[in-house]
Image (cartoon, rainbow, N blue to C red; front, side):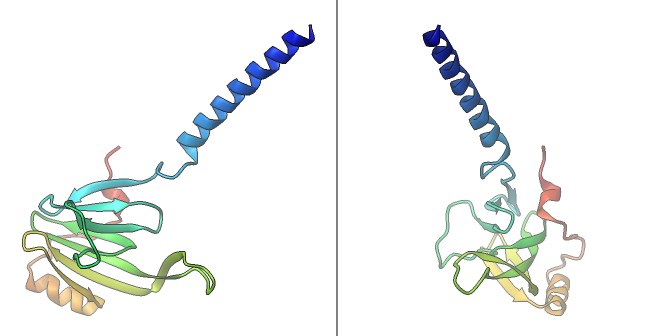
Length: 151
């Protein structure tokens, strides 16, 4: 009888373990709310790797010398050639840590020419508005990156 109870307990523990792991993978693990999509002419991608790591980089990879729009992008818009973005600067979470969080007191604006692979910025809001006029991008409306995600 003890042997049967032991086997039943082992089976229950395995079932609970598997169920718990599936729940964690589906609801807690990194990646559940991550997304990416092409912007501009399709040669650049907006990546959301976490709540604070949202950036735009070329599809063919990048290095420290490649022009990207760094994290944290909070608003974005594009047409077939240009990408415009609003971005918060980043700061260390605390003096003794390397993890960075958005610093909403540092607001930058960017214009990315996806055809020529040239990035303009960071701009202040006033400089950004002048350049939006210069590049004739007044028809683009900045929106949060999540607004473009298709579920």
